[in-house]
Image (cartoon, rainbow, N blue to C red):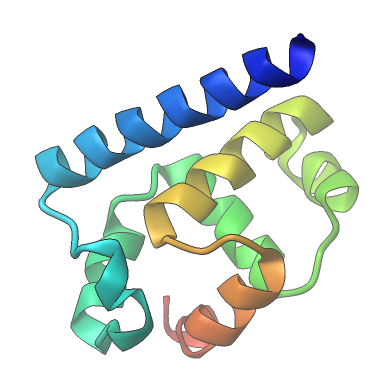
Length: 108
């Protein structure tokens, strides 16, 4: 029974994300692999200042626990920011984040 509840929540979150994507005028998910540098910069600009701080720490290889310590916040807060970063940058893992956005680590 709980599994169906989690599935329902996940589907609800995905539909909310699609609404957010259309309201922010983001590129469609099918173009995810074809992101140009300009599109990537636009997506990065959507990050809040705190998310940007965490974004750079993730690109530098910090763990979430280390990032929480550096940013002086709780682990759960860092985890929430990380989830938001993944959604805004259209990635599903830290490896994908690093591969797609590593050229922006030094530039900003």
